[in-house]
Length: 520
Image 1 (cartoon, rainbow, N blue to C red):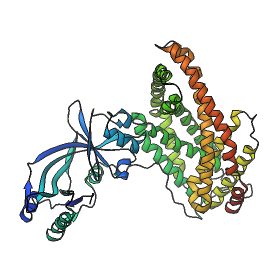
Image 2: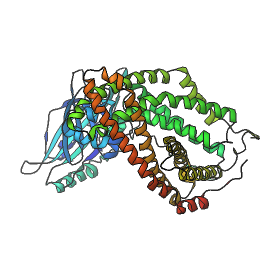
Image 3: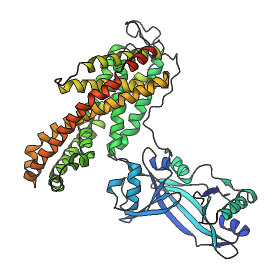
Image 4: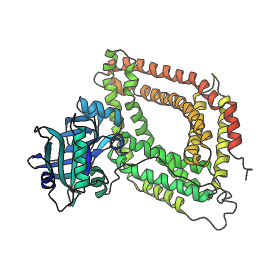
């Protein structure tokens, strides 16, 4: 059976229902008005998956969230007209079940309001049976303080089970005989574009393609500028606390910029580079408490999953306490991100990325005019070799700080490979990134468990004073034991992952691929 429909554009001057009724045997329904808000995630996950979601508009205390998917009947759920919809906050049922697999931790956000006049038409055969369903829609983008903007009139065709041939025949009548053209973009895309949005969503991927031979100054400026764009894009969602990925992607952009400035010395003036790195370090410190608590709360089911059911219930006061700490930390974060220092840091970041190359770089910028692949390749080679050296020194008696330092160095290497890897053969970069991710997963797990354990142990006195605190304290001990056990397992996994990362084959590939500049 054909599952996909067809969407055609109607001439604005014609009555779509009358146009179709003149050529086909149809049963025309009564006109109705639709007022709805179209939704998607910030990064366009529904659209990318072929789904669409809308919420009925109006002033009612509840509205209907409708999820549409080709080949499936619409799924509906009652929701409050909120500024966001997380899958876990939706009422249990088919809508939540389907969205949970697509959204992850991202929220559905209202993107644009569309008010339409619609009319349904049923195309009938000689037996008066419906063989194709049509819908004529004349919509406009509306909103408070916005002048209504008309959208292209549309005619939608939907197949009926068992009548594929009728669908194809009627499609030929509409397109060939009546001259109707396929809609160039879906109504969702057109409406979102009208309000200045991005129908495909915003990507936090850097996606910068650099040409070999580009000067290090120009290439690094391009990358830093794109990273600043990502930070800017994610700032409003972070301030509104729409979902945890906004802060995560903001932090990653800052961390990557710090990494570029740290690793690619000799491209910008030393004092300017050092000052910006210090400001970005401050931003990182500002955002860390909320992110650490986000991770702890996002992994709550994992934290409590190994405990008996009764013990999991006993930990409810701990979850509430962590949520209060997170709310307090977020207020501090919001003040900082709205403050002058952050605004000046972002302006300084952009100014450095856009500064013109100096006519004479001199001793302060010895690598500014070198080809970017030579400068980056040298650093990739150097950081990798240092990681191998430091990793080989880690044994059973090594302090946790040794693994943490190796993890930080691994982030530096991964960012260099992700940001500048297109300059080098993919056959080398992709396996290298894969091996590094495997190592980073283990090191990250080890560090996360250390941070979580430390935080939970520090909450003992506060937790004891909470209603239900004494029982929670008993279960907290079991949760900490589970975290320590997982941290120990991560440490045991380290040797195996590091062996892959530091293999002789990887070392040979690094030496053959990435140049070694003489120190300057």
